[in-house]
Image 1: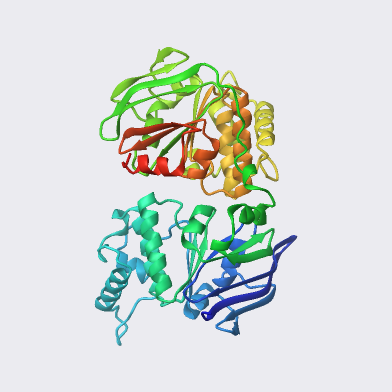
Image 2: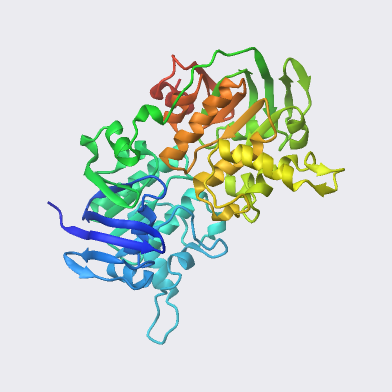
Length: 497
């Protein structure tokens, strides 16, 4: 049995009116990848903040190598050997890799001057040890998203930590970049580091983790060896429901073709894209990052302009030059990046939901009809079960899942006939995913046609009636729901079909 590096016993953290953690036990050993699993609100983030000194416990103990400790600040936690890499990268784009790695803890010469030579040498050694090919003097703004994540990892290791916490580290990475990250995690494991791995994606947990601990509603539910636990067991521990309830696929008899594209091309991005969508159909689009799937949808919605090709709605050829024209023709698009493109975080729920139809809700297009706004917001907010104190609550104060529901409500309020959903459940917890999937089934029954882009194979397989797979800007394969399998889809997406 490896040495237990960190252990929490009966840890509690209370806020006014809230028990964020209520008697949680957790431990991680050297050379172990331990998945911390739970839906949003389960207490994962609170536990991480206790381990990293952001919060201090209300009750309970934190033990480091068997000795009780207290972390008064993040700096105290780092000095004790614990570092966290968060979902949102916190690097400084204008600075170099070296400057980012040693931000806040520069190596200095005896006279107090910064020792750039030693910092460059140590950064290079860390990059080499993890087999990462990045120039230490490169400016971070010129690096890819994956490389920026690697800089965060190098920065954590520059403190010579023994425990690395990774919070949703793959959310912005392609399939190949995820594989590279797994290799780094395995390298850390070989060196005897302990990795706490937090992810909503259970396939990642099964791929990389040795042990798991499940939290629910701030309480410890259970733990075990990943290889001995089935998916159904872990899901039931997380949310008290079976796997079949996460993808509540509704069989809908499909109607006529309502949307068709023929030989769509955009120079340098994609070419010869042809497909059709029927009433009541959910058409899944799968492809690795860079395959062109999102770019196709952005051209269809008028965000970008096509080079060649034709678009037909209900058999009639249409020209879509901008999103306004797309909306007028009954087409809506829910983008992948809900924070940057989907919602205006500084505005409230009501203002977000009614933004695309603000002209319809205005008197002579001059004065807003607030009662009308509230009626529309109430209708769609209630249907999607948006959890908020009121419709005037700022979107930035909502959970990720509720932000996603606001974006859904916003575009559904336009009453589209064709809905494009780009990563509709990215970064949200299992119950919220199930709620979104259930709502998609209801929309299909109402004869809405949907195109769903997703990087999650279980979602593609679980929700799609038909599947289109893209590779390097082209359609590589098409499958019916019955024909599709994870192996076939991955082969097509990687160009091996």
